[in-house]
Length: 376
Picture 1 (cartoon, rainbow, N blue to C red):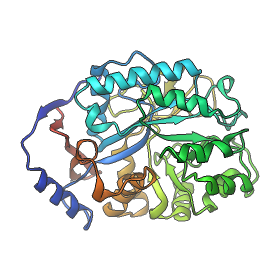
Picture 2 (picture 1 turned 60 degrees about the horizontal axis):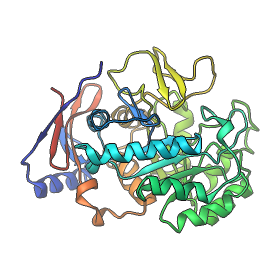
Picture 3 (picture 1 turned 90 degrees about the horizontal axis):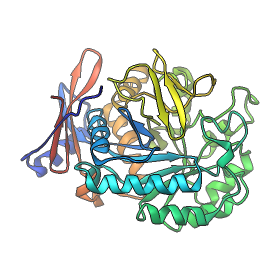
C-alpha cells in the first residue's frame, strides 16, 4: 500500500525560494540545492492511481500528485490514451472534478495530454493502444473533449499519416494546443508536412515502433532529423538502451530534448510487481520494472520516476544539473508556449529541495503552492 506523504502549509519566503531556484539554474548542484520543480508532459497514472479510469477522487489524485512531487515533478499533464469517445469524455470530466476538489491539483495540473486516438493502428506502432478506437481524424472529437476538460487540453499526440491529421494539426495549433507525433508510421515527407503544419514535438521517441524496420529509412530517423521537432525520451534503460538514447539525445541536443516518464499506475518506488490498470487494459509490472500488457511483447507505459531519470542521464552521459533543468523544465515550457519569466505562480512556480547521496540526487521535500510535501 502506498502511503500519503505529509502535505502541510508552509511559511517559506517565496522570493527567497525563487532566488535559490534561479541560482540552481546557473551552477552545478552541490550537496543540497533548491530548484524549480520539474514538468512531466506524459503521466498516465502514478502510485496505484490510474488517470485513465473513472471515477477518480480528489484524495486519489492528491496521493498520486504528492508522490510525484517527491520525485521532483511539481507540474504535470495527466495523460489519456486512445479509448472510446464516451470513455475519454467521462474520464476528463472525472479528472477535472478531482483537480478542482483536491489540494494539489490546482497547483500541479497544467492541463491534459490526449495521446490518440488518431494514431497508427498497425501492429507495433499502436503499442498498448486499442486500435479498435482509431480512425480518421475528427476535430469534433477534440472540441467535445476540450469542453469536458474546461479548455485545459494542452497537448495532443497524433500520427500524421492518418487521414485528416495534417488538416487537423493547424486547427489544434490555432487553439494553442501543442501537437506531437507518436505511434506513427509516417514517412519522411509526412513528418516534414506535420512540422510545417505546426507540430512541435515527438512523443516518447524511440518507442511506439515495431521491432523490425528498415535500418535507416524509418519514422525514428525522420523525426530525429527534423530540427523543428522537440522530442520526449524515457530515460529508464528499458524503453531505449543507454547507447541508443545517447545517440538520440545527441541528435536532438539539450535544446530540443525533454525527459518524460510515460508513467502508469504501476509507477513509483514503492510499487510492487503485479497487475495494474491502464484504462480498459490490464498491465503487469515485472521484477525489473518493465510494464507490459500480460502476454504481449510491447511495452505499456513505464514504472520509472523522474528523479531516477535525472540521475540516469547525469550518471550515464555526464549531463550537468543545468542541462537536466533545461530538459525537464525550460523545454517543456517552450513546447507549451510559456516563457519562464511569465509564469502563473499558482500552477508553475513550484520548488524542489534536492540532496546529493552516494547514488546521485534525491528529493528531500517539495514546495507546491502553499504546501510543503515530504515523507512522513
